[in-house]
Amino acid sequence: MDFQQSGIVLDKINSLYKSIQAGGGQIAPIERDLMLSYIRQLYDTALNPATGYTTPAPVVPTAPKPEEPPVVVAPQRKPAPPKIIEISDTLKDLASTPAPPLVKQAPPPPPPPKVEERAPQPEPQAPRHSEPYKGKVSSKVEALFSMEQARELSEKLGERPVNDLTKAMAINDRLLYQNDLFGKDADAMNETLKVLNKYESFDQARSLLLSVAEQYHWADEGIVDVAKGFIKLIRRRYH
Image 1: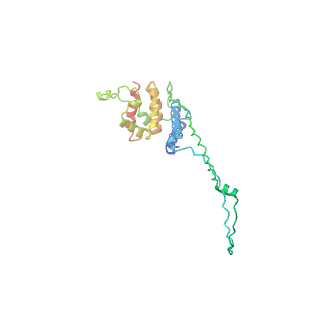
Image 2: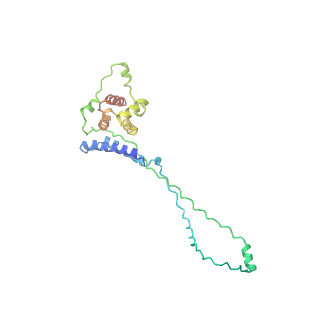
Image 3: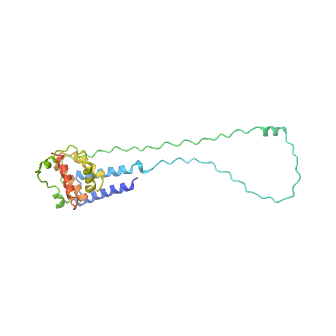
């Protein structure tokens, strides 16, 4: 289990839970979708095969070594004269017969590793009708959604419709939004874009954006312009 990644996901779950609790404990479908997305990330982290877990090899029991008899030092005596013993022919034949070779028994093969079946994960579902964000929204966050009418030709070209939010960003813009608006969490940004892609109007998307803006503090000084640019891109999805 990747404890570092799990800690990041748990922080996001706690932050979203505090945002829901601040709204009186009533959970909007949008907040429920975002919470389910974080829980799926935590589930994938727990089942990540890169954690180095392997099935231990079976231990093959070995026969215990026979205990060696203690060495007894006999008292020194005067050597007796050698005694000649006659060996019968039967004993001579037994001594000359070679002993049969010992056959070593091969250890049993190890059992095959168990393959864990992963349950299919549902795609994020967007509600058909948007509900207003029930949490407390600051005036600074509300100001992020004010939109000025485009005057220059370059500004009008920048408001062309977008069909897929996950493919509408350049690499530099994607990194900028990911680092400044989603706490450097690529998974959180991708899940949010997938849900926004399923909405039919910006009024539906606005509730989700308000929740995310409060959670990641988009109204903080230094990232206001980045947040407005991201919201402007989301508007183009519903033109």
